[in-house]
Length: 316
Ligand code: ING
Image (tube, rainbow, N blue to C red; front, top):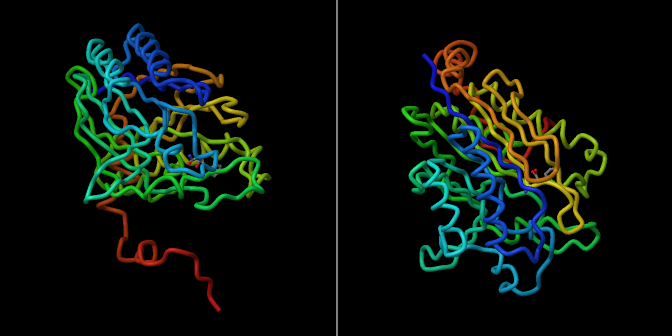
């Protein structure tokens, strides 16, 4: 018995600030067609895939920031992507900046949606781990103002039961960029039986507060997703917005990690590139039923500190 979903990690190269959503959507539609030629069922695009990674800049005026946000999904410029995907029978993950009117106020999230093979939005996730800082820090070569421009996500990490390929239904979850560095992200979905986690990211090579980590950016990228996959018996698909974008070098290194933790597909450029993997969802079972049989082996009574304590408190 096997339940194979053919996945396309659709890495995007740089998106210039001046590039329009229509131009970016055209690049994505071209990747959907390449994916179709290779029998791909599900395509994963990066985080904030419709615009340049604008948190690298400090903006005085909110209107300048809001120009990077979507007020509806799909909207006029993204509808062609949804329609083409539906025509091709391909589902996809799309990261974008969401501006919503909820609870009587404007809310701004770093969001991803899961669209099924019929072009319908079947899942939404709003980024919970927002890295960087909230105030302008001119000492940095470039800013990372996600804590300024986005609210913390309020949807948790839901897992969705979706028909991912003809006759193949699977349990899919989503995360965004910095989420992938935190084990809790994977475990919350693992505790819902997740079989495939989709993660888009924009990761600068250089991290101003820790330049000594720069040389390890690929190692850390792979380490966290391989670990998350293995420790929760799930497939993990990580997809970059890559390359030198408005003067900032961002890693590519998009990968597909199997439940074993092995990397089974990878991009090797920093441009628009499709890495393809045949993912048998039943390969999760040998991990979920043995080593990581949570119901049999976990000891949550001993884990209280993980949710009760935010920062580390060493002994006196
Ligand atoms: N980007 C980066 C990420 O978590 C970062 C931020 C870079 C954190 C390097 C630590 C080291 O991949 C986003 N968008 O979260």
